[in-house]
Amino acid sequence: MSPSNEDQETVRIHIMGKEYEVPKGLTMMDAIEHSGYRLIRGVGCRGGFCGACATLYRLEGDYKLYADLACQKTVEDGMYLMQLPFTPAGRKTYDIEEIGRDGNPLLENYPEVARCVSCNTCTKACPQDLEVMDFINEAIRGNIENVASMSFDCIQCGICAARCPAEIPHHHVAQMARRVYGKHNLPKSDHVAARVREIEGGEFDESLQEITSLSREVLEERYESREIE
Ligand code: FES
Image 1 (cartoon, helix red, strand yellow):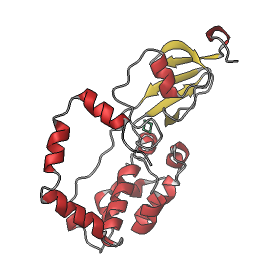
Image 2: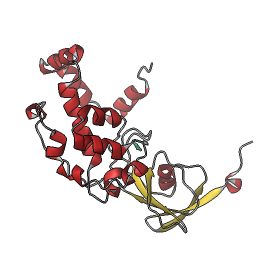
Image 3: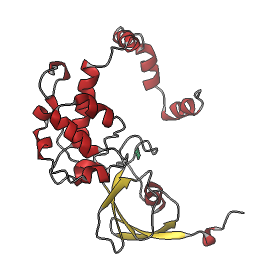
Image 4: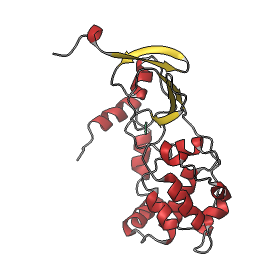
């Protein structure tokens, strides 16, 4: 038999400084919404994949600042939450077509990686448990393949950059490494090239026009009744 609401165990949390009592076991994201907030920013996939929900928190009596994904981390009693829906970290603008095989484009575009003080704060903060400091050191050495493979599961939440005392935008450095690696090292995908030709040839224009003319209700109905493998 499920417990009544009155029997439900609760925890006390603070959101933007205001105290709320929420059911135990909720994720930080569910607890924020349970407390009456409507999330417009700082929410995306709700499944730990998009990196939109970076949230900072402290625990009562603990001076440390922690960070995690709101859609994955469960609330604990005495948590103080502050969402970080956007991490202002400098992302360089570059033309991937102009990046050759020589030199170290990571260091050239992101010279701040050389400021790494090896404190490992980035690795400790990463909700994906990536070896962030190690791939930044690979970036300094210009080992693009290692940076690309070690950062493969990065979801661009930016928590590493938010916590870095050397102000390195690790997630952007790693994203560049994966792009450069994809351009120079991975075999070309014939079926992707074929699909791009189809798109450019206008093969999907009609369907796209039809879809964009539909109402939200019809789109939702179609989405709900779609075939899922
Ligand atoms: S909402 Fe996408 S990772 Fe949390």
